[in-house]
Structures are given as C-alpha cells and as structure tokens.
Amino acid sequence: MGTMLDAEALIQDFKTGDSANFLAEVFWEELQFLLSKDLTDAVIVENHGMNSRIASRDILDVEVLHQPSKNFLKEFVVLHLSRNSIYHQLPEFLFHPLVISTPSMSNREIVQAIKENRKRERRNIDFLKFFDTTLFSEKVAIIKRNLSFLSDDKNSQNFLLMIRKILKFNRNISKQSLYWLFLKLCQAESTKENFEAIEDLLRRVVGVSTKIRLCSKEIDNLPFQRVGAARLGIDLGIDGTITSEIDDLKVTVLLDSPKNDYAALREVKTIIHSILAFFVYVGREIHIVFELKDNKKCILSVNHLGYDTYLT
Image (cartoon, rainbow, N blue to C red):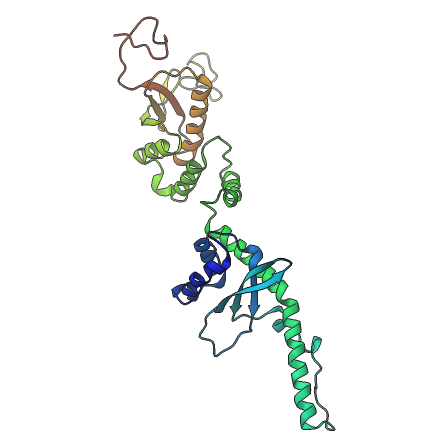
C-alpha cells in the first residue's frame, strides 16, 4: 500500500460500511489489516463525550489528517469516538471557574466569557488527546492479543507457558500438539478410558500409531510367608501369584521401519506415558512396547536381535 493519500478512498468506504458498527478497537485492527500497514504511530483519538442522542455507535467519523513536518506531510488517521475523554471524567472545577459571569457584566461580556470558556475546553481536550490515544492503543494491543493468541507467535507464548504450568507438562512437543492436548483435556471426561479416542489423540499429538489394550496384572511379590513358616495372626497369608482386580494397560507403538535413535524412542515412550496419565485410571500400570508394522521376516545382518527379529 502506498501513502495514506492513496488509501483515503478505501477508508471512506470502510467507515460507511457495516464495520462502522464495530467496537473502535476492532474497527482499527480491521482497518490496519486492509491497509496492510501498522498505523500505531499514525492514529489520533478524539473523544467527543457520551451523548444520549448518539445511537450507541462507538465510531462517529474517521478522517485522514495531513500535517506539514519539515519537508514532507505527516499523515494521521483521526478516529472520532462517542466516548468520554479523560477531560470529561475529571471534575469540572479543575479546568473552569464555577461561575463565569457576575451581576455587573453586560450581555456582550457574558458571551465573550462563554467563548473563552469553550476555547479553554478545546485546549484542555487537545492537551489530553495524547493520553486518550495512548490508552486506546493499549486497549487495541490487549484485544489483538486476545484475538490472536493462537495464531500469532509472539502472543501465543504466554498461552503456551500457561498450558505447561497448568498441566505440569514439560515434554518437547510442537505448539500445535500442545494446543490439541489442552483442548482434549478440557473434555477429558469423554475421553477417559476411551482407548479409540486416546489412540487418535496420540496420533495427533505424538505422531505415532498405537494399539491400546488391557492386560492382566499378575502380582507375585506378596508380603506373606508360606503356611507353616509364618506366625498365626501376624504374617500368615497366601503364597504364589495372584491376579489383580485392576488390569494393566499395554500400549503397542507401531513403527513403519526400524529405528536406530533409541534416545528418540525413549522420549516417545516418556511422552506417551505422561499423556496417558491424564486419561486412564491411576491404578493401572502402563506398559509401552514397540512393534514393526507387517514385518515378520527374519533377515540375518539386517534386523536387530531382540528388537525387531521374529522367529517362526
């Protein structure tokens, strides 16, 4: 986009459309987007005060202002808003006398005093216009951050930090994966123990295909002694292996090809374990194994013994 002179026609069309009904901060962001330029230092906000006759419109008018500065014209966009300025919100006696006329004044003198009072008002508003504009720019920045916290890299950093703090999740996954995990955790009840949904979640977040199944939990390290070696009422109990009422979870990670980066595989295993902790009952022990897809052949000097070699 060229100078503001080239954009005046676009601004005139934009301010007379439906966009004029937007909140001023949203209108300003849309206008900058259409002009493809940052106008943060070129905006002037002129608040005209709240008026009951105004049909609840935030934006009264938009104009382009050109002011000479050395050897060029300084261009500004002036937003006329139906808002109270700082001037309108401060006590009246700070700027004006409580009484502007006296009994001895003639009609001409009263009219002149009223004119002087209005000039003083205009000067005060012009003086505080800089502060009104600064406050408006700060509100624009806040709204922009709220609207683009997912798409803008700078604005999304705080959101990412907040997610990691809430989840206490410090694993190395992409920003998009972290967003997806957070959104799924907002609906954790519908995903709890839903293995098909969890498999889809792992595929999106970790980028691996998995099969999740329940497996029996065998307990063989019982704290009891054999009958005859124990003391009745103290440590007499059962011996051998028993099956727990709560099944364990077996997660099979399906690999397309053998992987030699064992550190990366350990990281995948840790991430899967951390994610599953949100979606399965805390009493389940999680067993994670790796398996090659459709690779059941044994080729000497190619596969890794004990890792992806299948004997038939």
